[in-house]
Image (cartoon, rainbow over all chains, first blue to last red; front, top):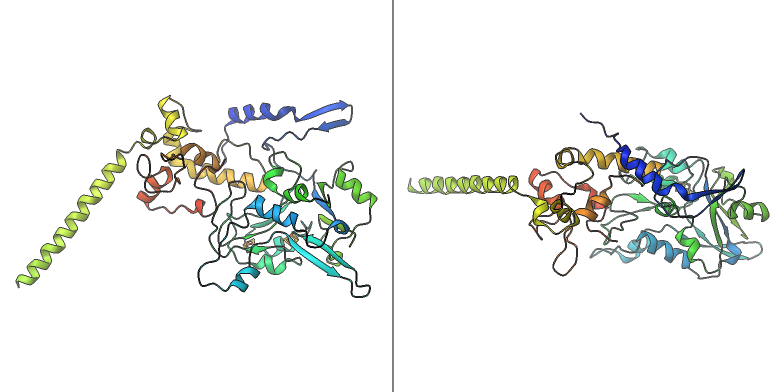
Length: 253
Length: 140
Ligand code: SF4
Ligand code: SF4
């Protein structure tokens, strides 16, 4: 029987030369990466760790631009309630990759708003418990669900301390080409992985935020905007006590 | 007595009709030149002597391996510059209606009859799970 591991090298080489000129050496040791969008042709590796810093002090109350942008990017709203379903239950179980959360400090009464999505844990409990290996952490730090393997047991939903995951209960109305999804699988924020794999370096939520509250980038690169911001401002991990080393950090909570 | 003969002849007629229709389906299928009848990019390519990412016989037999290999490489390693992709299959093999709208590759009718994926999968009764999540029409 033929194995699945076959590649057409000629075509591969052709594609490689097509995307080769995306890094320019300015001086020895300094390489400028241009954000030229081209589909990735090499496996991701751990030299990059994608992460985010969210400045919750900039999140105006009631603003849901990032949630909306996420819904649009990933087609989360193309989903209709079946006849006879309980509207309240339906609403509670709607897929949400970003939740808009309001926190109140009981002592001072200070209220902060923040978007809460998958925190892209370095030690993800969701991947720990997954019986099939569908929930996994990619080498570049993106935690995602391989829907081809997910059996929909929802164990990962129970394990996630951030309520970051959603289960798709019904057929979706539109299957987005960039983010294929369907009934019976669990899904969550994947840092717009289709963008990253296309050579882009921003997420939909970041682009949509009117306050520039979200900085996304490579945590391993000390010169990235997100690393610089993390070095400059105090920031926290939500539930740092769990020692998950999250890729999403917050300031201004 | 006459009743049971009648029943028998009805049974025979039903069986005969079934047999004939099965034969018709199978000959129709064997003679089907899907690419020549549609108006998809693949059909156009076929007319100018163009080829798929592998030759037709190879694709017929091995497309599932190709798709499965590439899906793992894409999801787990992020590699998207591959010659095989389900998106690629759909983009190239989807026909258009007269109105200009695409016909799903899983549809049983449309230009040239049953559409690209459906034409074999329905015949062989192999369920197409891909499209529970993936788009059946090009969306770009
Ligand atoms: S936040 Fe939840 S879904 Fe995301 S990696 Fe951590 S445990 Fe998994
Ligand atoms: S629902 Fe899917 S991803 Fe989550 S634990 Fe079960 S198999 Fe793994």
